[in-house]
Image 1 (cartoon, rainbow, N blue to C red):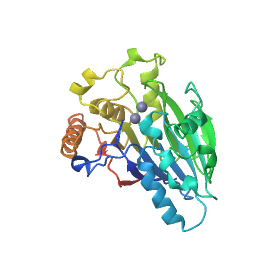
Image 2: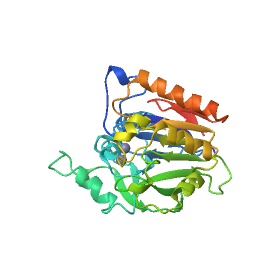
Image 3: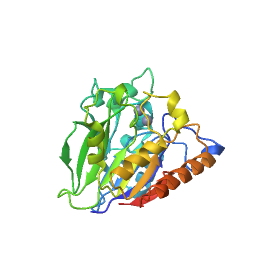
Image 4: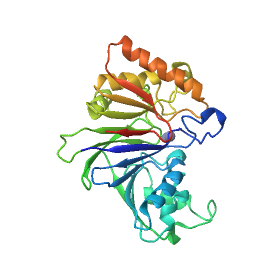
Length: 290
Ligand SMILES: [Zn+2]
Ligand SMILES: [Zn+2]
């Protein structure tokens, strides 16, 4: 199986446009994934999904657009692009929005409330496209030409990581973990063996996209906020024998030049530890083949 990825939003927490974030991008999380059969999978619906929507409409050339949207969780930066995703306003399009079963509410409710008249001018019920919802827990689901496995990560309110592979589990795998705090076991009610289980979940992935929000110094001020350090992301990728790590969910304050430095540090740690891991930082427009 070959998956083609394109990054439409790489920034965490809040959009951060401006002259200092031009190269890596200011839009919140959204990744387009295409399977061998050109099946569309969208990971998270931050503000990056707005431009993706425009691109999909241009590429569809009038034919229907169908896809699965997998949300890691319902924090603003992962859903705020949905009302601006133009294909949902067009008849003939069909999307299934996947969200965690353990939200405390339903993903259906969250998306509808985000378009309630108090906060948005267009009601969800009036959308011309067909949009349905599906809930997923820590389990494997088989899609059209792919399998997806969800894993509960450490994040306030809960979040999921997703692993995509062949339905027979033989081909290359791709793991997407947008928001996850590797460093603070005491904050979360995860099982005692969680640290081993997350390594198993990521094991052998060709590409791992992982939260890399903080430096060690920043993290000391933000324990329990749900995000990882650069070093923790590199350590996980090395422990799991990943081929390529993609630093993701960039801190809003992180400038392009700073991010270049953080990336160079990560690459130096890998060299120090004698690893073969390749590390890149996600940038808007970046494409990868898994
Ligand atoms: Zn986030
Ligand atoms: Zn979050």
